[in-house]
Length: 72
Image (cartoon, rainbow, N blue to C red; front, top):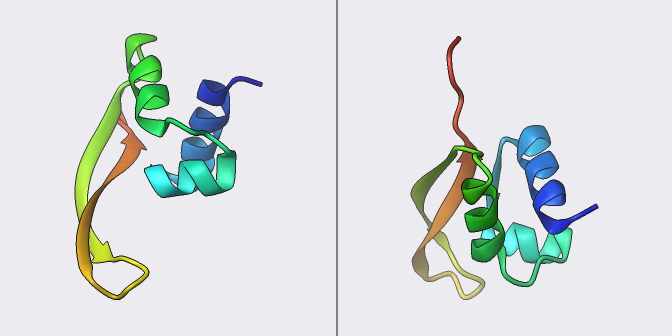
């Protein structure tokens, strides 16, 4: 299974993914490149900036990816 396939399956199952989740849970070293590869292959991916806390309790922003849901 390719990294793109793993990430796509993860998003189908968990609805969203962050770069950290991709690295920790899927072993993907370059999640942004994997997202770009999926987009190039025709997968429509939604990107949303999320505010959260880092491991030191400091506020930070990161991108959360999800599959674009189409009605039809």
